[in-house]
Length: 293
Ligand SMILES: [Zn+2]
Image (cartoon, rainbow, N blue to C red; front, side, top):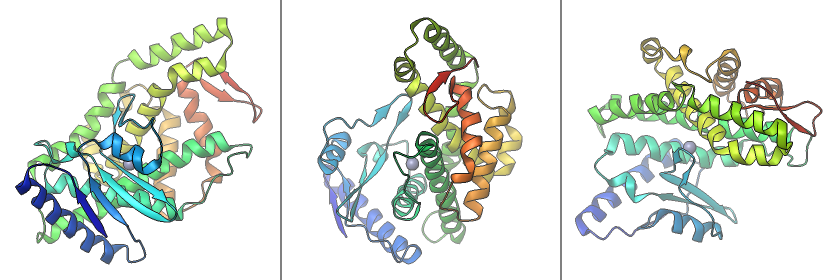
């Protein structure tokens, strides 16, 4: 595996290299069948991802979500790109290893989860379900591995930054949905839709709020499920976008993760009900409709 680090400071560069080599030797023991061709820490994260993807429009910030790592598959070769932001003062070895294993699990999922028929009747719902499950499995797997490594104590231990990181995951979600702002925004777009009738305009305008809340919800619930004591401390049941449809879907993701499932065909009704939280329903398998929240 090739390690490419473009960070200019030489001592920081060699520290990063040592850390990534350690990560490489650990993951080959844990995922012996997973081969990663290269790991890259570029100066410009988005530009590097674009080069590897052969695109020009990838940006690391979408809606409220900022990506810190991204894997790219090309002709069966896997590269993982890490943002230089990961090596700033907010993170430490403990938090970075969580992210390393999180991203590696995405690579694993990319190989193992069943592919969606893009032209199938339920492809929209299956795609949304797939994105959420991929994040959920990546979080749960990485929590499991890095907690075990920290418990061994030989490589890294739990740090204050780690504890802060976990609570940050939940407060990022809380900040987005604690007040009714996002809900009111979507309801106002539903009202506008009723006059303009253009569902693709509605979807375009609400897409980033929807995808951000979906991803942040998965991160928060994966954390609640892995650390149930934290769930007891946080009154998330009062938050907007956390209702019986949310809980049912998150319980489903946990159940699928626990049984190493690779197919999600039986989750269509659950994801359909959950996505009604964002003003969208698909009644006949073909057309979308905006619905009141
Ligand atoms: Zn992820």
